Length: 253
Ligand SMILES: [Ca+2]
Ligand SMILES: [Ca+2]
Image (tube, rainbow, N blue to C red; front, side, top):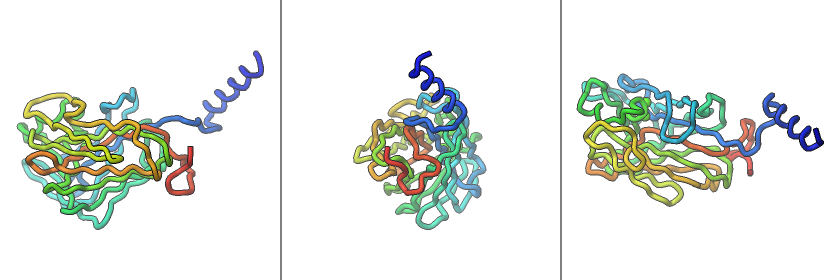
């Protein structure tokens, strides 16, 4: 065994023992948007695979902004009841490990709302993607053609990320235009028929998006005749700041 092999073996041993942090390791963070507690009668937190390839890692963070709350035979949800922004920090990655990453939801103009399809509302529920019902049946809504904002931070300044953004409602009138880093992509939405999730239909993918200032801003707005911009959840893949990062924006790579 030469010196190089010994060093490699020691490094592998230290990595496996968690003594040193792997440099350049990419993580995935999964977020399922759904109504807060007073509107959650028909929402369920997703567990399982998203469209992003991340085998055997099934954890999703439920991000549930406070809402004024209702439930009906159609569904449950309500308008955002917070002022300014609602943030949820210390999101877990898809393996269930702690991260410093936080997601912030803006109140919006007009005020944002939420919805979760009632599974007994068979016509609408059938249009929710079969392979991820609990992710896609509940969502944030930027209503009335208004543009709203979700921010993910802290990320590594200057690092590049992959984002899968889910934007589908419960019928074919709902399309969502997402803008990240100056680029806009619009979902075609769901057909009025049963289906599995489709790239470009139920979700859009942004690759190599730079977190210029250590954060990513996602604008979402309705692009269909309903004028509702639905945002069901997202998957983020890339390098995350250290847990002990002491400055906003994390570590320079
Ligand atoms: Ca859900
Ligand atoms: Ca959702």
